[in-house]
Image (cartoon, rainbow, N blue to C red; front, side):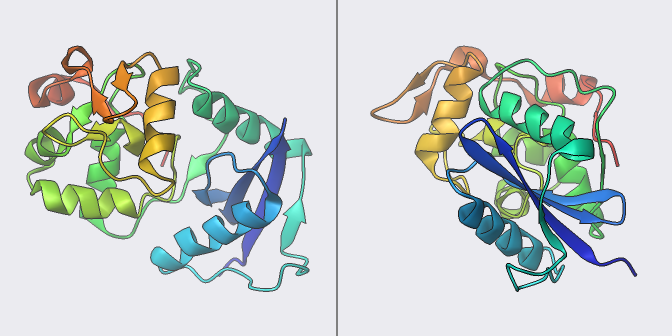
Length: 207
């Protein structure tokens, strides 16, 4: 069994948290204002996935790094800023969830292209489950931005919940070219992708 190694990378004025299990990425955060916040969110994500990270901030398993993972940190920052990022070749392989349904939900969500959104109901239809189950699975998404759970919205076109807050979710969507009414949090219907379109698209998850 490998130890879980937590890393933080400074990307411009923010910090990205990364957790590695061997050479696999077990979780990441979005870019956050401080190293402490990145580590806190990273530990919460890992615990929700049943992975127990080191709790001591001064542990040698908790590192500030650049080097070999700086490309990954840069990619996550670019995704946060709404930039087009090629999914191939991926700079890292993701640790596939043990739960098959969770993996399936994440694989379908990974199909949603930049500038488009899908409803929880559309994702549920493709997966063969309920919108509530999809929402519960995405609430535990260990790979925000890499697997774009922020692109899944409510059937009434409101942005819906997001681990980092609805305003952050709406901001990412706007930077990706989706029209979002900021006061209400409602998304333009023109960005909506249907379940039939999702079925035709291929998954790009680097398990």
